[in-house]
Length: 223
Image 1: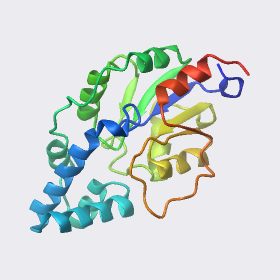
Image 2 (image 1 turned 120 degrees about the vertical axis):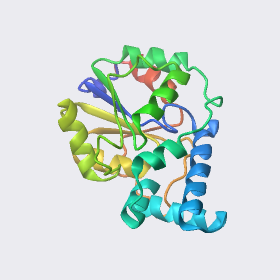
Image 3 (image 1 turned 180 degrees about the vertical axis):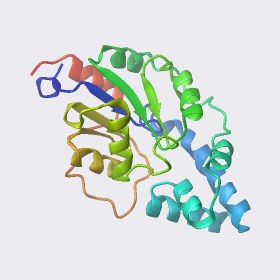
């Protein structure tokens, strides 16, 4: 293990565009169904629905949070609809599974999606047995990343010491609250959409475009 990471005992991973590359384009299908849900709910065309969807995403952390705050949307109804997609774009990632298996300590998924969807993604990636638990949007009481309460709730739920924890995420802004409570942060910069006004990267400890390779690299060195 890389010497400067030997203190890490809790390895926390985001799901979408982190455990699989953004180039798989899976989340584009979710994004499209979110647009369609907004269009049906509000009664507008696809372009206006897309604008509203993105406004809620940037302003509230997730489209769902915006829809709940502004329209009283049932989260189960929304999540069931937007996650009803095919998974053919995802392939088993044996190198990633092997690297995660070698990590010392506990491994968890922390996602703004829900656990049933996460289970389907993990199964396609060959990671069903890789993680102790999935801390999802229901577990955060619908206070999504980057809301600081979501991170405190994660640590409380699993008795995680933040200073002994590392968080891997493709949305750079979602790493800031993790760093604020003492976590080591890893940004998977693989082409995910970022908010246009989120350019601060001072809270990021490590950056990679391939999480499997990064894990193998840190496991193969002690310097």
